[in-house]
Image (cartoon, rainbow, N blue to C red):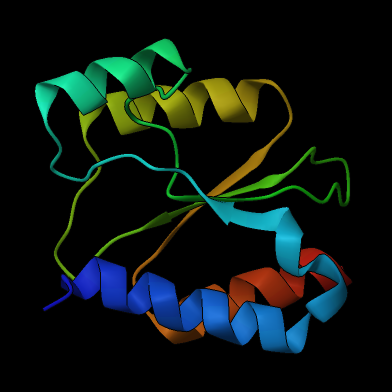
Length: 116
């Protein structure tokens, strides 16, 4: 069974790709946070996976932002120290960073970002 954050993220991605088919490939997940073997973790780290990166990135510049970084959290989930560090760096370089806990938050955030 999928974790609550995973279920939420899957629903959000499905909605996004139906709502914005032209942009569908520009919203992508970052493969962080899953349990994996040490060997696989070393391979991914060598390939550039960085702990703390947002769960999804929408690679569309809007309103002075280079991209939209989306961290999905369950209702009581909290950012890790590495996630807060990534948020600071992402915002420092002109990216918008948001935490979404519900489908409605995700939908409203994306619609506002793309239509402002």
